[in-house]
Length: 258
Image (cartoon, rainbow, N blue to C red):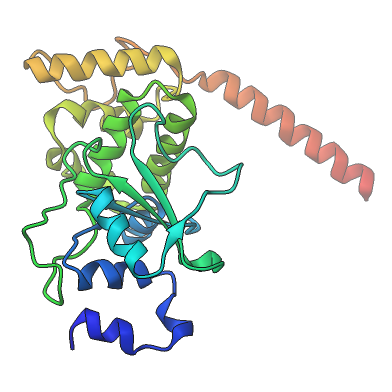
């Protein structure tokens, strides 16, 4: 049975579930890719899943399709994380009725390097897996983190990457770096080495320069990290001293309680 008929034969309570937008898009042959937390969960992350984010080739086409099926324009809560760069990204928020589970956010594929959503592929029952490959997911998040000048957006992207490093064993494999585009390989190695403050302006500038050199073919990978030639190093001595003070204070507090 096609996705189109499965969608309209389900009950109203099931039909407008969190995944209902996917059913509607597939039924209308509009391809999409799961993004953010759903993509992280697909690769083993234990992060909490929030709203449904979908990357599409044409936000306008996907929005028109969903609105014809009953979705209406909406806004995200005021204090939602900065999921996009306001200066660049096209983002559309839709909801079905007042059901918080029926919120979908559509993002254009254009600003995400290497994440094309082929509209020529079948979007029916034989559609390809609607998740990016791990290397494409990593590359897109990392490239955008270096590209953006929006600090809030970069913080969110780096949080996504941190979840991948925390829970996805493939990133720890020495072979993973070879699956990435050459210009982002050192960035991965620097993350994995845990030697640089990734969010620091000095490190961002350093990583941008490394990426540019890699694109020119003028960079040799430093597998133990590139902290010796640029960026802001993590001060391990300070970290150890701070941890010791916190532990000592916790010990005193516990003694006082007993």
